Image (cartoon, rainbow, N blue to C red; front, top):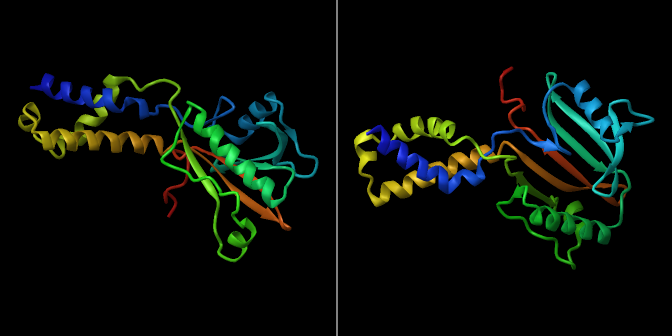
Length: 227
């Protein structure tokens, strides 16, 4: 009986394992985790340097652009790296930059997307943002550096499955059950992926525009523990 259950879970893992994550979000190969002081040292080793005016801000070059880099923490655990373009540009330039980033992420096998829209060439970004309060953003999710261990994944999935089905039902699953099991496994994988978002948005300052990008580790974000 246990072998039958394990076989079902293993088949689900085979279908969905490509979406699984076992590591936290990474920025330039550095896990977005640990203390802020250690993160600063690691980023400096990558070529970033302290900002001349703000001690908590680093500056450097990222993806071919001069940027300012900010580190956000929950307690002393890093949960976000925020990267802002250092040089704001005009409306047409930001439209091109936003769309280019969408294409770059979309072609990068390290990321998956649930769908993002490019900005049309004739879009009035200034009007949309200032009058309609439209927010231009795109979100992607980092793929795993390596797949989860299938044995561990089965151990995690099995209790979830057994909350809904008995061992006897799993031994002879109906077609409807098989579809439900696949959906349950897929939802589980998507939940893992959602812990590793990388997203960016258009920001505005004095009628100029720049990209703000976020590498988030959702495992370290506050979830009401202090309430």
